[in-house]
Image (cartoon, rainbow over all chains, first blue to last red; front, side, top):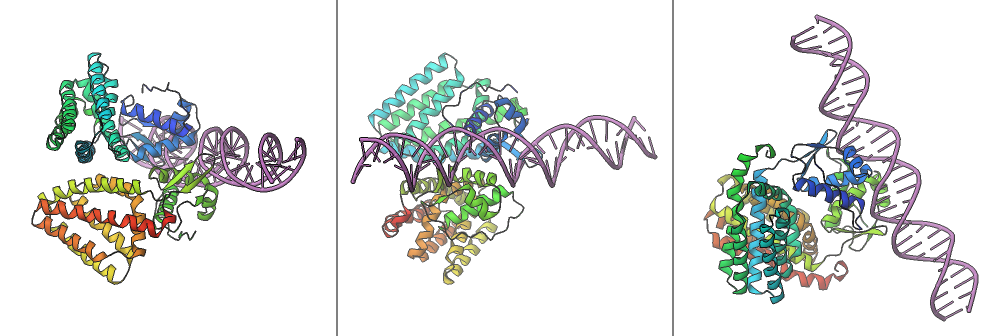
Amino acid sequence: MAWKIEQPRNGNSVSDHVYEVLKKNIVALNVKPGERISENEISELLQVSRTPVREAFIKLSKEDLVHILPQRGTYISYIDLNEVEEARFIRESLEKSVIELATNEFSEDALFLLEQNVASQKNKIEKKAYAEFLEVDEAFHKTIFQECNKMRTWSVIDQVNSQYKRIRVLSFIANINWEQTIEQHQGIIEAIRTKDTQMALEIMSRHLKKLNIEKMELKRKYPEYFK
Amino acid sequence: MAWKIEQPRNGNSVSDHVYEVLKKNIVALNVKPGERISENEISELLQVSRTPVREAFIKLSKEDLVHILPQRGTYISYIDLNEVEEARFIRESLEKSVIELATNEFSEDALFLLEQNVASQKNKIEKKAYAEFLEVDEAFHKTIFQECNKMRTWSVIDQVNSQYKRIRVLSFIANINWEQTIEQHQGIIEAIRTKDTQMALEIMSRHLKKLNIEKMELKRKYPEYFK
DNA sequence: AAGGCTAAACTGCCATGGTAGCATGGTGGC
DNA sequence: GCCACCATGCTACCATGGCAGTTTAGCCTT
């Protein structure tokens, strides 16, 4: 129930703005799974009419972040481990395909960007700025897709992964080891640089499978968030 | 401009109904890329108010089937070969990952379904029922995902592929050889049965790369549909 | 005290009206 | 003939009202 709504709408339409505010709050677990929200409630909260709110609900339901029951109510979805696993499966498949491209051809400039990014990651961890770390982490992967000219593929991942971003937020709270994540990122850079496809595939695989180990533990610790 | 709107709405909401009617017509190329449509026009055509039409437009724009220019108009998207290629890339990646699962474990019942499906494919081709063939073809692939318990992955493909379904419709008109497609389907079944992962991967790869060859030719033949 | 009924209070859904932004076509000035 | 200007008519966007279906609360009956 601790909504954060302070962000301004940068040129976007009202509808997009509502969508983004809601999405951020859901993913950051500011609003708990199972909680009921309504068009009226949100429209008052954000001082807009019900129409854009409704449109935002529809978009969110397409990503399974909310669950609309016609004439009954709209609820924040519980985290569904089956769904998270399939999101991970999809992501692994696509990331592997792209990293394979990356080990064949990758510009120096983009490599530099990745290096910079990892430096930033270390910085965020030291400062214990976990939320910011997550963003930088995402940016790392996104950069690879960008350089391979596969931005649409990235947007597919981005969509599917709103699901499991919530799990990563939980990981923070549970304090999983981040050093390993950064090491893996450095390994990926190295593999791209040396054009070692096998190495890249293997690291990426392990990198994304980490989540598998965490999942069960998190569900045990925070059962109220799960289905 | 030859809309087909006769289908009844089966329990769906009005909004979903409008969405599906529009999507089918766009994919089937009943309405040409570049053409302008408006909330008013469609709402009159389907005898509903503008709200559900607008919601349908938003959904379609998420799949890049239409292009919304705020305060200006909404246009049917041209077929963008770059986009089609990326859709193909995504599909190849995911289909390969799933077919690998399928060669490890697949029930007899599901294998039987696939056999039946291929029989149906032959039938459709003989009857020259091309539109129906496309549906059965889709069902073939869908069945594999279903058996592997990866329906969400399928829905990702389904979404991304509305793009290139339009190309397949064009393929009909151009009369590409369908026998090869059916042969490949049979090959996939055989590979699953014998648990021959390598064979399955290779056939699937060729199966989906067929489109690559057709693309350029189709663009040459029907430039008015392309960007 | 417990169960059953009704009415009020919700929900999301759809219709409709108003508005700002943009395209277009025509007019007047040069 | 050319161009700046403005009126008109379009668009998607958002606000608002009414509605049918559902939940819930409270009263009444037993």
